Image: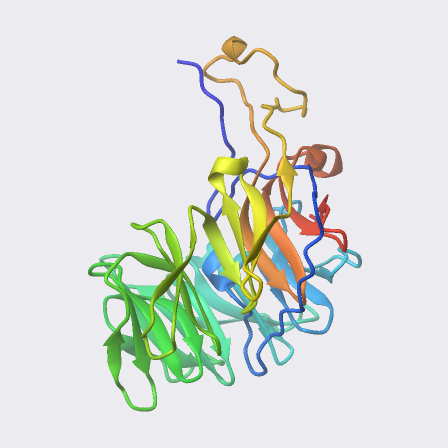
Length: 348
């Protein structure tokens, strides 16, 4: 049987490509909360990119063998910080925190100049949220069951705080988590120790800010918002994927529209397309394959698509496959950036 290969790799690879923009969406800057190492829903997208609110991006480089790099927002002054293949990247107080694929996803930190690398938590960790002098994350046990932990930013005072659950978000002394039993969204108030169930459905892509709690209801195929107390749960969007939100705007990808990127302005209820990906199928040289019936079982081919949306200092980035990337880096997998006119450009 003939088939088209779509490039997919660990922690997110999907297809992305050269694209043009129909209209520019005027988005306000996404402000990183003071004292947090993460922003918006970037950790929920694998945490492959992060910012420091000072014009620098810290990221897992596609062209640099997935190692930890630093660059300016425009991609200039690229600098390798570590050979670790990283994810769950946070930046706070002159340190970069991340999990390392090369050490079974243990938690590491390194200074923003690439010095003083150190392992601070040993174990299979994910969904890392660094805030103040604390970290919240999940870690798997010997039978591959995840539990939510807290620790100091030096790895001290490691404590299991929620058994059989995965970390989903941290906001204002509240830990949001997904129960392993039912995959429902819950919240634990760290000040009162009150535990509350928020959803009855499989929930993910959780983002919390002062406007409420946002999540993707996977079974329903909807992106919902509720009040911070869990009330007034309502559908905001239907039919998308890879949601990331910055209070006023929700960014998402539509699988039915060539995996294009869209933005929804919640204040005006206006939806705009931010990319226009080709529907063509390409070979390993970036040439269009005119006759798909000529493909053999082992032929490599791909389509341009978007996935994993990252918001950094008002800039929108994404990961996927891009025809332009072949000439820039020799591979289709890349990170892309939307410029001031919302044109999608090869970034790394």
